[in-house]
Length: 459
Image (tube, rainbow, N blue to C red; front, side, top):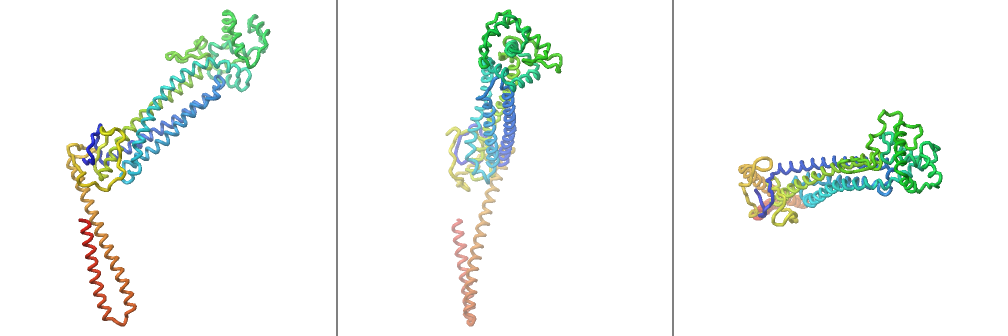
């Protein structure tokens, strides 16, 4: 093969022109796959935003409702730009005509893809940890959801609809919702006498839902169990009045979620020890967490895809760069991961010579292989001979064309001067003939001098 400098690469792979072009097309195809995965991330970002907006009354995320999808959309936009630019760069790097324009960017972009791979993996790990910690904070925000349901018609309608759609009975906190929302509804038979007296003896404030919660916690265990049992009975019997709509008469017989929803802490994902304070929040957490798992799975796939693109792009970069340095773009070269001399980022020359000096060309047939990624010994030698013959023929044709052009220019100039003289000296025909012969001799002498100079310069 052709080598300009003696290097010691890691994992060398021989390539010819066909192999480099095939590798460039493979990288373009992988970038297209990355674009499809990026489109999936964008769609899931919209899905996450819709889920968070629909369940906004359970956990009002005013300051960070759209933060996860916004970050994902920005992440997807960056990936789209990088994938498109990298696909164009890889396509042109595998071709000699426009390779010098894009080759210098490949190494930097390989490093960028490695960084993105690490980021994708970290996003996948952070999703699980962040969502798990975030689920446990929902219990601290339950009072906000109670407040929104009690004093917001819009929140009440949305929560009732979610309860009916999900056949949700409210989980362990169902009796809390019923007591708070039934205060002032003139349904005294539902509440025990002690609870009625306590409710009428206090002045409730709308903005102090924590006060109501503390009152419920101060009740005895027997009263709490009575309230919980009555609440569950009302939920399954589907009353006409719906202070907390957990049933819908138009649905099937199994209107509510199973009894584990009434446990003190409902296990949303038992194997992960994730709990929810009530059924509706559990439905929210389930949908959100499932979407996050899909999101993380796509991020992990993109991580390994970026790593594969980075490795293949490094092979294409090193093989194309060696072909440029050797001066034979159609000839063989070798790709490698890195050089042992200077590591990953080896310096590249500032200019690409048209052809190397004779002393820089070294042929190593023992390292040549067969197939599109290399050539046989005879094929490699024949390819080198054909390349040299083509260059010699092109040089001869160029010199011949230059000589003919210069000769024709001289003849044209002399002919123009001769026509001017003929117009001024019409009477002296004999003298004109002598001048023509002298001019022809001068043109022949000058053409011979030009030809000798060209031969001397070429030698």
